[in-house]
Length: 117
Length: 81
Image (tube, rainbow over the protein chains, first blue to last red):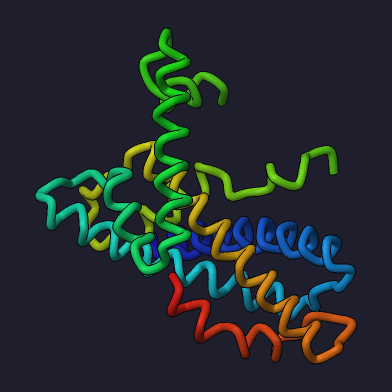
């Protein structure tokens, strides 16, 4: 049981590492300066741990609002420490709401994505 | 890679599973929008880490971004998120 959990965790870590690698490669190309493999691994590890912090905060925020489901309001609270970031997240939320309205026929994004898989 | 630069990001599924695995209580659920927003947050976090490390490396006139550059920007990065 715990072996299974460990393996999933390892796979998720690998997925994060992969995306971090691509994002670093992209910035590297923009600035003509590559990242060492060690640096990419360190950024991936930091992102993974940051995700842990996010999850614990989100859970606490949702519980404080007496909900068991984390929603976009909780994510907005996570982004409160930096003004630019919270504006960016606010705009993203509005974009998501707009998209939902324009795809009026479908009930929600979740059902839409399930049908794709 | 066929994808445009802006399209690189974390998958919804990955983030959803990752967040769920970190929750203390099993009954905590996630809304679809929340997952997409966290994925965006994490992308901004990584890009911010990458660009700040780039700048640090540039200020030290290095050809490659090394772990010491990332180490130098890490404290401020963590304070900003």
